[in-house]
Length: 142
Image (tube, rainbow, N blue to C red; front, top):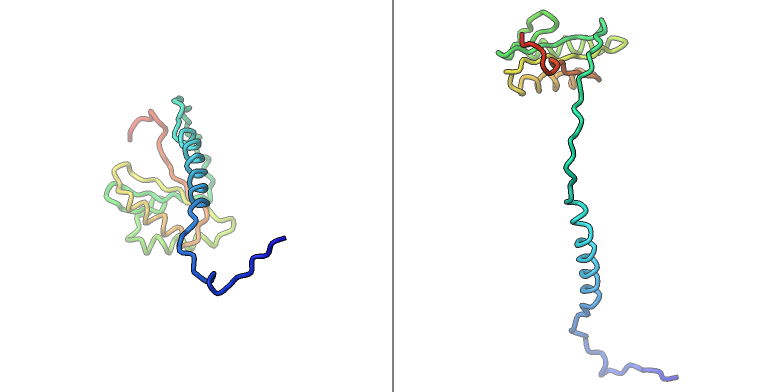
């Protein structure tokens, strides 16, 4: 059995980097990517089913908040002055048991920002359920 005893002459720092493990890992990753990319990109042309809207069953405790084309907000049939009044009404409704759902009816010409403010007010007021009321496809316009 041969022993290699280090001498002071062998204290030299090795300046070459062994790149063989790096190349091996890179080749394995290249092969994996080449095999998985065609599977991820491939799509099959299918005709997806059209879902019909289920009629909403309105419970008496549910509250309808409507927004018209001029971004006026209505609590039921009552026109509210601003979003602060809406937030106050939402906070009052949020403490009721069982908590009512807020049904949002937005005019088709209303900017999304007005609907977004209602959603944020419902979230800040503590409402857990928000629903959006739409007309079924093919329904006559009001």
